[in-house]
Length: 316
Ligand code: NDP
Ligand code: OXD
Image (cartoon, rainbow, N blue to C red; front, side, top):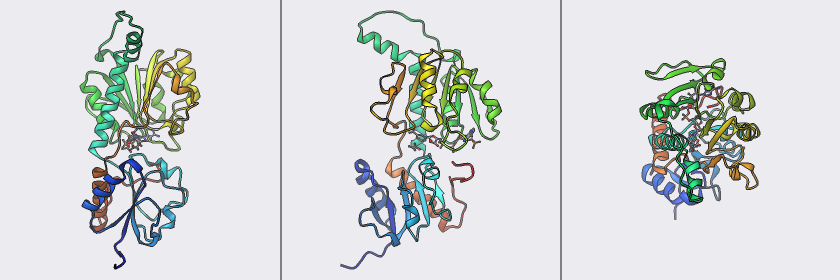
């Protein structure tokens, strides 16, 4: 049998979805020898890599690498974690309508659950207790969305459509009809002080590290809630526990954590005011992942600027 001399597309090993990734890649990119995982990988032949939390130094060990695509929208798993990343190789992050829709669905679920006191009534049902409680409607609630990128902005628009008052925060100036938007760190305190719910959709970078800490929580309205689907590193977890215990915050919906999987002994698991999901707000479907890779390869081939290229200085 003749040896396969095609360039290799390396795809991270993700046990449950591996067959789907293999199918999508083999159908979409027949010019590649698709290799899932690192065992028996011919390092010299790898020219493209689709990664999630690559082992530090692994990408640097691929001498002919031309493109790295992050399976996730967030790239902290590379930018903050792999100091040896070969910086001459372009790093593209995942932007995909399916991923954005998943995030919209997650945030809408969390905001409506908070508005409708879902946790409270679930407990009432368990206790077979029939007790009416006044519920406010969406126009009476203000939601602050932190991060107005590919995900944050569509989320903000959807919340507005649902009737909420929406305010938003980003690093750079933005203007969008019907949304009150501010930018820069000086504006953050005043913004969150107006919100009944704060939705975090920020990436994890040096600048956003534990941005939600004691000072942040004390500048929020008493009894407000947070939803974190951005990254765990943006929250000081002890400060959050303190803010929930003191009643400064009423609830937290958390999909992302400082350490994932969330350790079994972590106080969050059994906290009555915390709702946990295991980083499933949205996931990249293999077909979309391969589409993103194909687009980047086509852009490289056509000598065009790459879409969704990571800015290493900004860290996202
Ligand atoms: P983008 O890069 O498109 O948007 C990031 C947004 O954050 C931008 O609006 C940016 O501002 C803003 N931002 C970054 N740094 C700062 C800062 N220091 N101060 C204020 N604003 C800042 O990313 P996406 O919208 O595609 O994704 C956002 C994050 O969502 C990802 O990084 C990831 O962490 C998380 N995510 C989580 C998922 C989950 O399942 N839980 C799934 C997908 C994503 P500006 O517009 O000025 O650049
Ligand atoms: C992420 C993702 O960045 O799942 O968290 O896309």
